[in-house]
Image 1 (cartoon, helix red, strand yellow):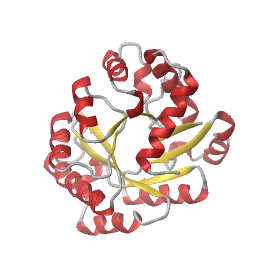
Image 2 (tube, helix red, strand yellow):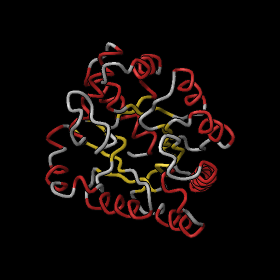
Image 3 (cartoon, helix red, strand yellow):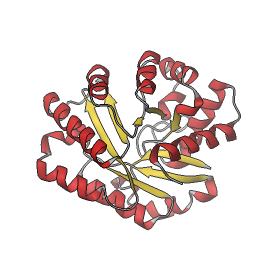
Length: 254
């Protein structure tokens, strides 16, 4: 069974075939999916999907792109939504210095606030970190997640990966590990113990080879598992089994 630990099935790119696509997951060995959020609207949509589909779980939170729109009322609503039965994490939260859609100080402020909320609620976190490795790690080190969590679609170095693991967190690997010249991701997979790796699609984004340029979906997460198996000289089924167990541990799913 495969666990896609990060997807966005509320995205409009799935509007035409969402139900048909999700109905096909079981026959394609995708057993569990975590639907992450980036706004109040998508948090509610993630919960709706989780309540509709037994194999989907939800995370709620505000993405750094939308940090400029966050208020204390928004945070109170995130806290209320977190109590829904199938919400298993706060996320995705973090920093994005590539697009800078929100001022960096604002991103950092609400990242810290959402970290504090996760610790208060005793929920793991799903961290978005793009071109912000230093500030992201500084915040995580100053207020470590009490219940752990993941750096999703990890793009850091082996040295950063070791720091993440030292905080009691795990690393999620996505489609770019399959890209021809992505040596850093290959090095990270080789270095990090399989017991601390998760796999994801970030659907509909970041499609793996051989599907670059297409809409991504959980049907393609197998390519990430295949690449990890190749790098670590492991059996594909064993990679799927262990990464699934890892994700279930992180999100406390029995």
